[in-house]
Length: 95
Image (cartoon, rainbow, N blue to C red; front, side, top):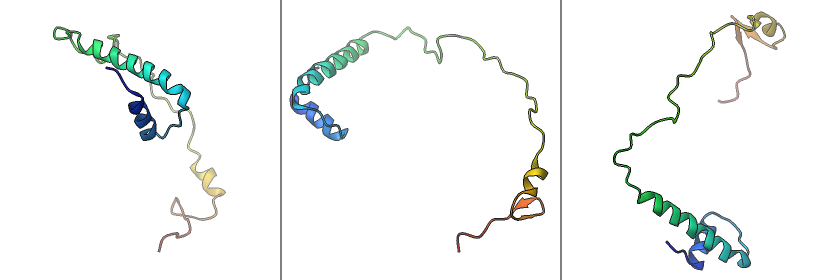
């Protein structure tokens, strides 16, 4: 697939990119090459290829859940401006 100068200008406008006029031929060539590669990849027969979620068929090792910090609720509520029944009280901001 071959892109034209107008295609690159339109893509740049849609992407809100400022491209110098002298760089347009470079972008035209590079984007055309990328689209050609995608076209080649689309032509490959993948009918007999099994889909896979990950190239390595392995299970992830998980660590045991362990408590790393104690309950500091009482300490935190001691320095809070207002607490009632174990809950932090905050000023009403929405009427």
